[in-house]
Structures are given as C-alpha cells and as structure tokens.
Length: 140
Image (cartoon, rainbow, N blue to C red):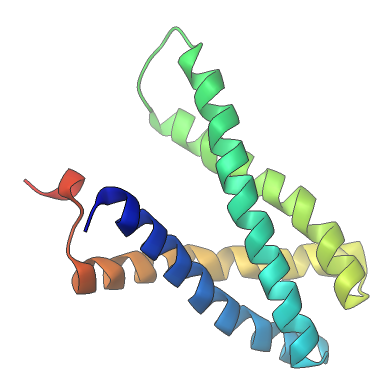
C-alpha cells in the first residue's frame, strides 16, 4: 500500500467508525433522533477533517519561520492545545445550535468527545497497524 493510499484509508476508516459511535451516543445523551445526531456526527467529522488540514497548514507555516527547529515537547503541546482549542471554538456553537442546548452544555459534551477521541485515536491506530502493518516510516 502506498503512503498516500494508507493515509486515505486510515482517515476514512477512522471517521466512519467515529461517526457510527458518536451519532448514537449523542442521540442517547440528548434524547434526539438518531437521524439528526448521525447527521451532526457527519458534520462534526467534516469540520474536524477540514480543521485538521487547515490548522496543520497554518502551524507548519508558522513553524517554518521559527529560529529553533524540531518539535520539542512544548511545541507539540502548543500544537495539540491549538488544534483542540480551535476545534472546540468551531464545534461548540454547531453542537449548541444543532442539539438545541446551551453553549455550556455543548462545551461539556465537547470535552466528553475530546476524552473519547483521545482513547479512540490510540486504540484505532494500534488496531489499524495490526491489521495493515506498520508504515514504512515506522519500520526499522
């Protein structure tokens, strides 16, 4: 599998499974029809993918202008906080409007999604690597 096809397959599977899990969970948590929360999960996924691309482009442009090269823990922490913080700023209003809940409730729900995706990303990546093998960049 080429690196590009691997990345595409990984992103599509990751998002498809996430949508399949998040939609029903939101339906149960907020007593909304599954068709509505499935639609919301698709919208959230689309926003997250778009933000991921845009944020990494912005971050890498900024990073290329820094005198100190490399990715220290502090830089990686800044990247993570910037990505998740920006995503929350975008997702909270969408969730609030879609689910007809307060922004505070949407923010709390977003924190729950953040915890879920932290664990899910680790588990998914491990399972994906077990099924499809490690990428060339990780082989010794």
